[in-house]
Length: 88
Image (cartoon, rainbow, N blue to C red; front, side, top):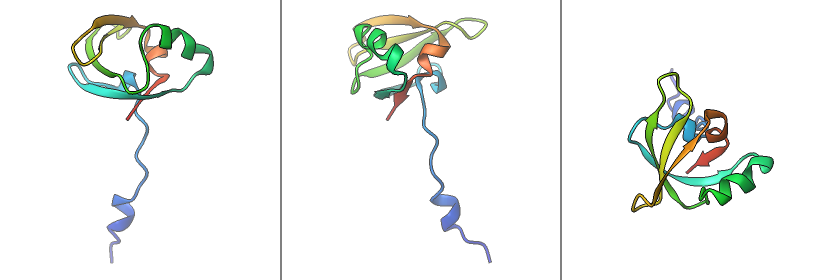
């Protein structure tokens, strides 16, 4: 007998900005790295703000994000920095 409830109740993995697909949008939940948090906050990566992955360099780093619902500005980040921005 297969118990399907164990399959559906498995914990979901946390996603970060680096996990976004090209053109995908998401909302920032929190910043994971306390040392990087101030820098990211100053660049507009504030919890509750919508971001969209705009482009990825040919070798994967850096990436560019469109920050804000109206596309307020474009931000370029290293993938290691993007990995610290957690999404809802």
